[in-house]
Length: 209
Length: 82
Image 1 (cartoon, rainbow over the protein chains, first blue to last red):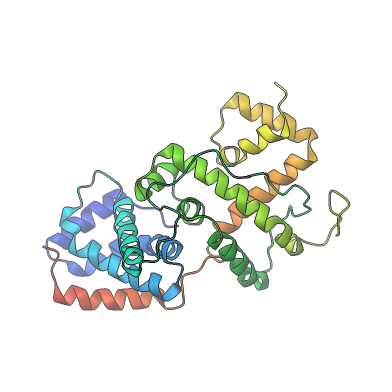
Image 2: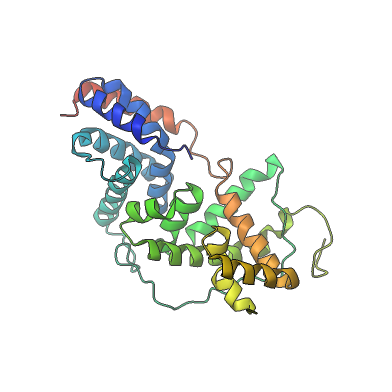
């Protein structure tokens, strides 16, 4: 993630509004990844997410004069991205029964971790990255929507809890609860499958090397 | 205070983020010293978090940025921000 610089952003916005339109490229660039992955988590389709990301950037540009600076620029941008994504889902009529807005944080579900594991090392071989990426994306895709969005902004884009809450329009407490559950579900899903990526060595529990 | 495994799992995400208070952190650390199951759970959860943050694992589609900025260029020609 590229760290936002509020002073640079404010100066950029002032100059864009004064006519230096080309500066918008620099202003939006650090947010591109977050916009795309947030939309991908909502729309679950690469081409649709990319198109929606472009629309989002254009809407940000056209509405730039409405940015008040009372939130971080990227938080504001991501709320526009989220609205773009939700609008498209409504139009498609494909909103699943699970709610994106309300969300359910009640104490249900099983978040017990996968405990038998020898997977303690981070895979480092470049060749494995692609395969790893596919496994991770698949696992994230399988998460309920309300967890997927949180994990995406917090863990993939490394936004802090406050900014994640702001971008999704939920409380910081809800971010923490959902993050915990999302990580627990991912750990349980991924650990048995990623063990094979660990370097060859004797497992802690006498499992396969 | 002695805490059990379930208690550790409940706080594992906050523990990884450095969001547990000093007393709870000390309890968890003490538990981890002797519990191989929980330290394996902690390691694997942390692995997942580290991998997700790896930009090489989650890449934008090839040419994404170029296409975005090309489209922006066309829009910037058409409309001013005011």
